Length: 333
Ligand code: TRP
Image (tube, rainbow, N blue to C red; front, side):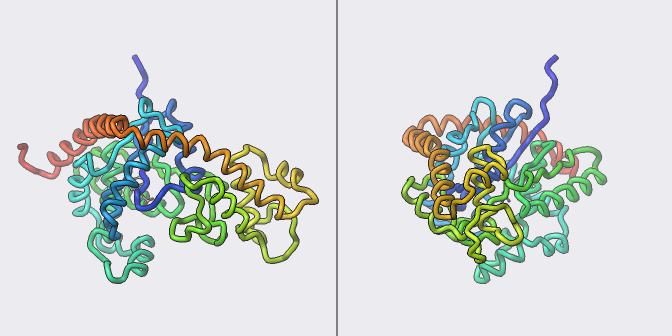
């Protein structure tokens, strides 16, 4: 008999276009796991409306994100790719879990504190209960592993707590998931703000998957290196975070080690190093961008992928949801 594969799940909000940080920190690593795990990846569109979105843009980005997932190597034959809002069980379990998540717990979430400080005119209830919906996203599929960025670790920890609370009341309904934070180097910082992770909110320091080569080249030429004017390619994260970030990027796309990179650019300054990193990223992104563009033009194919994905995800999700509904005492329809 075939052994049951472990389950892996993650999602990205289509609230911005995908960038180098998403690619190196997440998607590239996901693509490598398809044989080993039963993988679910989704566009977390329900989460995006906790902040106001332009509807047509949200639709465009959701479809584009699917095309980019595939172009980055997530084969829809081997991974379940779907749109969160196409699987109603997410919202349904989200509501139930809101009733098993405490006000105090949600109040302590740093993402809520940050986002409510940033959007003071729109501190809505969804922004507050966001982690309960994320817990539902996760628990529906009983994943063993949930790869997330450092900033989402707190949410996965809360998911574990909610799952344990529910299981203590009703028996083993949920699998308590492990967060999986990719190792250092997978975390990419903004090219102009090496103290902060790469983000679409600082577009001049953010390299998007769909950026044209000349745009990428320009962004790398303007990357911040260091202030000590040493002009030497050396890995020193504390004192030269900009250079370290560029070296991490170069290492990730070329497979070279930091020592090899230091050797390669010995005696050469940032004026040579920065364009070289840009060139390496351009060549990594070129086939991805071209494939994504081709897929975006093939709407009927993308539709078939997200329909199949939602159907498959729903089968799994609805089973968990039915069990939960029964446990809490809802009358069977
Ligand atoms: N909250 C995540 C983020 O903003 C996206 C997300 C939503 C997610 N649901 C998830 C990630 C479930 C992993 C698992 O990045």
